[in-house]
Image (cartoon, rainbow, N blue to C red):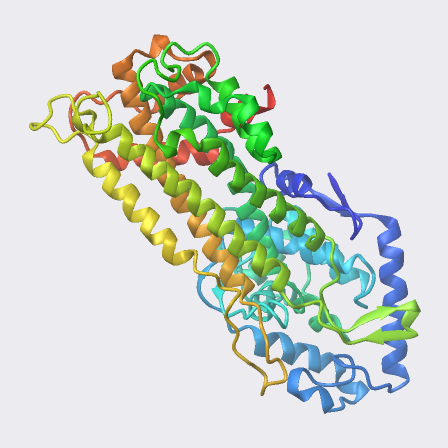
Length: 502
């Protein structure tokens, strides 16, 4: 059970909620803050005060006063009019993350919603009722308005949800769980959709997968070093220390650990004086990706606990301020940076693949073929990797440098952060496929070198791989092997356990 306070949620806890399916609950102190904030909203309505989003319209309609008798209808219209997302649905895991993040933000006690609204979000998480949310339609600045409107619809008994392995009408899921639809009152619709929870939820999933993938990239690259009789000296600690980047030092340490005891690595001058950059510069390149991951983690953990709706209520309603915490620029930059960093892991991996298969660059059979010429071996796997790397270069174009005005120029600068998060996730998916190809090629090279000569740690990974992907003795449909390797990397935590035991 993870206790939400509005202030202390971590990526580690999100990992347990998303991948460990841990349930969530709200702290009693957070609910006290929520109730105090709610009283302030009710007082504003009672006093006929003019406060944005509570007794006024939205966006360009902020100067339109709403009569107290219409405040519930205002929220009803808000959710319906903003639910205009398009495209396929976000992965179910992202929808689950959105629910958690929206509940946690409201628990900070600055949003003025009723306790029952947050309880319903938590009930959805614990019952695994995950709203179907289209991926397209957010500008990432007025909040993720369209995606979050779709997140809210099932609370009202509308829209669709993922439930018990199926996509069904929300009303059906509510009925099965014995839950009645709720009616939103003053401020609540706005508080639910005015925020960065779509881009942040996608960012959380992207980060967690990127972190795992980066460990895997270090491990797979060590196997390639063995397959190419790489020079171990490049990972010497002193080289790393004199440059000074902690992440570079950590990757080199990991490489030394992974390759400890290997009979397949060489010393400089033993077989060649220097390796190519794709081997020699693994600590520098992978280390730079780890630097980026650390930056992204810092920004996400701030955003997990941020109040991002508008207006925000302070001092028991004595101060109600319209600001711009819904603007997604910090996460937009982080997601663009994440995509670029992960694309580089694919870039250097593809170059290692080339060195594994190109007979002009190694002393292995051409394309690792059992019968060069008659059989193509893994020749075309490098083509596929090159295609993915090229696609990543397009996806890595920053989304955050774009902006299009909206709401009659009232909202005249936006972040496009949700697009950046989606692109980063696709880059991560593509990078995993490139690394899947590298591990297939590395294992085949090691098959030829003699697996018994491998380091203890990399041999363990090799054996796990061979249980899934047999040695290549004759050409076959390699798409199946790539898919198996991709699923192995996505779902197997062996790699993390290796590095935690360093």
